[in-house]
Image (cartoon, rainbow, N blue to C red; front, top):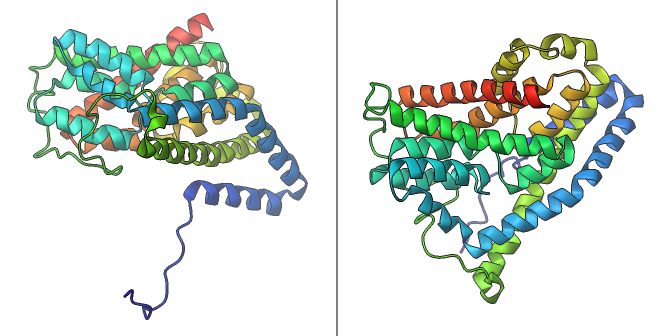
Length: 340
């Protein structure tokens, strides 16, 4: 029997994203009550505008998970090293799988001797773009920006992969792993990316349950982060002086792009939450190049992505990973500034 005499219960777990949204609205209500409803109205309207993209993204990711399409990812690490790098960068920039799912897969590959160059390509590209993020980005920042970020994701993967292959014998990349990379992770994956896809997943009860659970999980994930982001966007547009943003991150030249990369690296909240924030910064005068460098550097260095790398490789390899992120962000920002 369960023990019913346990002493006092702990505090219920509060989601940080919802808590941050509530605290932001409380702060607005206390400091500027007339602005509360316009802030809420702005967030609701923005979510409604993005809802078709969210719905399609949620259904697409749930289908890919339920069908087991993730198993195709292993094919990126077959063949010669240059082919692996190209395939890893392409699949990393397009696959819909979170960092905690990637950790056990990458750990298993590294443990059996997969080249670090291909792993680096996948690591760099993976957190930058996926189907859901593409749809949210295109719905908020436009199709052109979303396509450019996708190209940049693949490009930075190639940059890191080919650079790592070229300097594989250098002290930076020699003996790159920590003591014992282990298969396992926060998603409880034991044998990651095994088996074959089952595209008609609805004939299997377990796969239907995966479709349902994945859809609900991703819908809640996107809703909570986008709600926070749109509330912060409304606050930013209302209270942050446009002249200040334009003066720091606006204008032409390489300096705003470099600054965008170095600001984006530590300031990133979440790949989805960053989209409305960048939209607000662009409204306030941020340059297109700085916006691109912000989302690239921040996406690669955000906590889930960075932890996946830090957990498996030595600090010098992790430093190279961050270096690729900054360099790739600046190059992507400069390229986007030239064509936008």
